Image 1 (cartoon, each protein chain N blue to C red):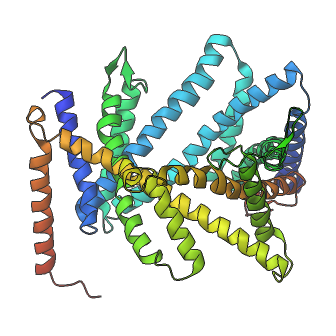
Image 2: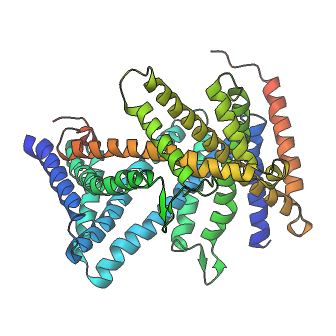
Image 3: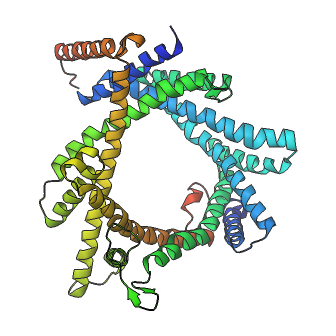
Length: 216
Length: 249
């Protein structure tokens, strides 16, 4: 039983890991076909992973409604929004438009989801600005550098900034394309080295936390 | 009422409910927030159902007889055994498959695209041979491919990597290199911050443009009426909050 519960999963990880790592070095149509199929398989399995996440959300809010806890009305709104969207989406076969005409699902997307999402992120502009006011006071040399870089990039992204400081557009591009990209490159190299090391640890069974706890 | 006019009223109302958070956290915002989560989850469920179940599973199996697709379906079903405590261990097979495949796919691709390619782009010739005259060195800062920028990028990448990875004491020359790395990092964080602020501003302008458009008479001026309604509701909620004694447990 220990083999089935603990060792077989590790064996599956080892075999699939080595197989798909080796696939990259085999330029044969069969190998390419295997990669295409595997990508499709991952999408399908990922769809089931969504069920795990959604049922957790369903359960959490259902409990809140059943017990009529504080704010249960909002959970009800969430349920109505979710079930309504699912019902309309299934009714229109998940299509936002048919032959150029907006469907009811497209209406929900355009007049509910887009405004809600856009405004939710837009109000962050105010909070980022207030956070910047608090944290950007040039207390040290490093903070001053951060402040100057942020101001130049902000000025360089809008016509008014370029009008007030004509060089800000060019300097902003230079900061983004040269200085910023060099840092991003260094971070990417570091993160990638870590990812490769972690992948090896997973394949060879050193890292097992993804299997979860529980008995054996 | 036509769908577009109704849409204008709904979009304006929801936008104003979210904006009401700028005054303070209030029930109107919470209502819109929960509606947002509900609609978004519903949307993702429908899209996943359409993309995965219909187009990747049902249609290929029914129309093309691709029976092999039942294997990932079975693996996916194994994930759901998490809900049956006695059979929960079977979900490990699904996770083992996904994680193993992901790790296997990641190793060569990460090494190739994110390590070797990045190193190759960083270590470029610092001078070019141009004809019989000899070497050239371009100083144009505005051209990211110029030789001067190549040197700056090399210094940036090396110093940031040094700051992060070299676990020796940062003293002497090492301190200077590490401080250069910090300087590059600060510029990058500042640039990232500035860029994010402007992206949010762009979204804000988009929302305000919609509100201005929906204040038109052809839509029935939803912006005007719903703004008044929202302000009135916030005023009533604030008054009610003042009248009720604080809840002390």
